[in-house]
Length: 547
Image 1: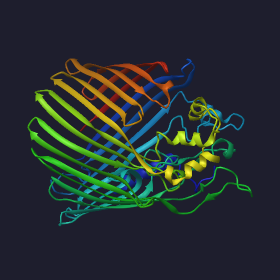
Image 2 (image 1 turned 180 degrees about the horizontal axis):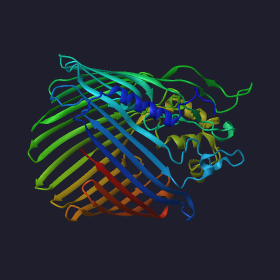
Image 3 (image 1 turned 135 degrees about the vertical axis):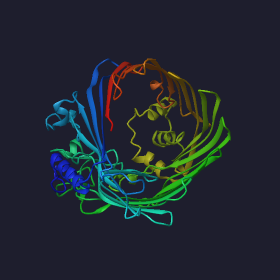
Image 4 (image 1 turned 120 degrees about the vertical axis):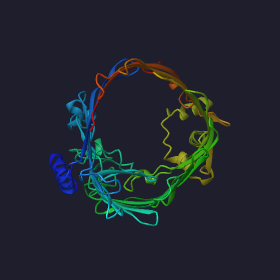
């Protein structure tokens, strides 16, 4: 598929990054310290249909390598400048991926998955950082890096400049190319949602994958202003703007003159601003609040607030509120559809009645906003579409989708467009969570339970469950035995055939042969009437070399 210019090969791009890191580091490194870490996770499982046929087979090996070098400036001075390098690579190899899943065949496109790679390499981060330069006024970071703030996680290849003023105010300016799926050494997990992007050769786009978009470079920039004074008080303002480049298809069907409708050139991908503040006083409590505003959709994307009060050394109470509206890349078709906010309000109490024992309980509500009443909207569409002689059985078949009525046409569409049927409504869920933990010198045991259930005139289902977990050292701080039991039950009135109760257990022995190595093996077995029995075997190895 054509894309926006040639992409730099992975090896060459990694070499360029290392050259940048080396060039930015001072030559003296007498007092430098180094750290090497590695994680290896092996996983194998089969996904079977309710009839026992294996529909997906996976044998995965994830390995991550972390490298760090500190105090590259030489002799360390407490308030002097410092330089360091941080790097982490991840390889997600899947030995269960078949060739037909990654290679497009026009005669048999059913197994092909655009963007799927058998062994993708992801440079999670790799940068050089300098702190307290120019008498403590400046700091910088260059390379692949993350920024985390009230606007959400964002990853980019570029540079960040930090200016700390004498007025207890810190300013950050950053910019570069957003990390996107389909680019070398990149992952799609941090890009805005709503667009399926990647690099793949697809001949018949219309009949196979009309929503798959070619990936292109995505420049972006941001600015942040935050407090740099007392550590018990913090406030931060953030602004971020990103762009799309290259081609983007704007239709799923060919144009009358041939080809597909598309847009090209530099255009907006995201634009958001927000503010977050927090205050905390020891032995008293804390307060936090923040918001994020989506300038592209001109709507509040997120708002939250929380209060925590320590009534005694062993009792803390608090309350939290959160409002969230999903937002998408400006190229996404999901911006065209109606989407409303979800509000969650929870109260909590945490107590430590005895040494090693702590209890945490939460309870509250979740409010779902929708255009139209979810409990009666479908029935109204069916009633408008069916003849006046229809029976209750006909109505049930319509609600189940067995009569072929298209809600986007005819009387059903007319019913949907009437504003009186689209007024905003609220549906309420009740939420509760309970966690109890008891720790002793060589182990712990915990119990977690949850309940979410519909509330009001119509029931929208229920989900409830509990997990009992334990971990015990067997001797010498080298061997541990852990495991858990879980029981969950869910009910969906819209799909009663999917109601089920599930049971599972996990056995997880651990072994540390030496101080810098840790091995863990997990055996998981899940059972419910919908899928029968499922098994998963997971092995984890972690190695560290510290200065």
